[in-house]
Structures are given as structure tokens and as C-alpha cells.
Image (cartoon, rainbow, N blue to C red; front, side, top):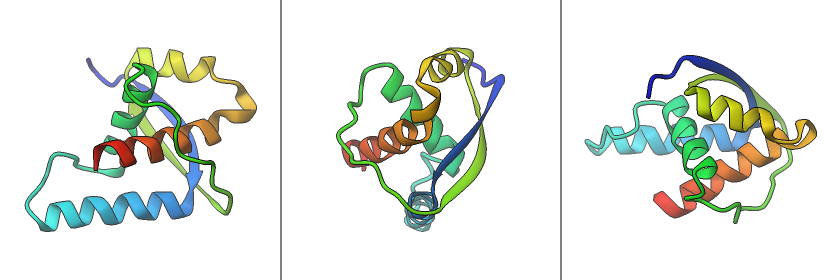
Length: 103
């Protein structure tokens, strides 16, 4: 599916740095499956909304990093159904849970 929508997300600065470091390490090892932080966030959100990942990770406090991610219409619709006050926490937990189950 084409990524035609854009989401504005906030996630833990520590988590954002962790993702970037994991991707850099994978690229240095010749693994280019995930091209960018946005790509990994897209994969994590898709896995969560498709029920392939449960929210097993705990929420993390601390400073937030803002970013935009291009997503499919179905991910945008599912994201918009999340409670507004909990979206950042759910996204962070979905990403952490995805990392724990996939890497």
C-alpha cells in the first residue's frame, strides 16, 4: 500500500536515538531491511494495528522528540481512533514492543 498520509508523532528522545543506533548498526553490518527511523516506526505501527504486536513494553518518561512519518490511510485511521491523550504513550509502547519482538 502507498504511504499517502502524514502523521506528526512525539516519542521519547531516548527511544528515537535507540532506533537510529540500531539502524546504523544494522547498516554497518550490511542489513538494509529497514532504511530509516520512519520506516521502523511505520513497521511498528502497522504490526500493532494489525494485532501482530501487543503492548508489552512499559511507558517511558523523559524528553520527547517530534517527527513526521508517512503512513498508509489505514494506519492513519487507526491512529486517529486512539485516545488523544494517550497517543504518544501508545506509539512509544508499540515501537518498544515491536523492537523486543523483532530484533
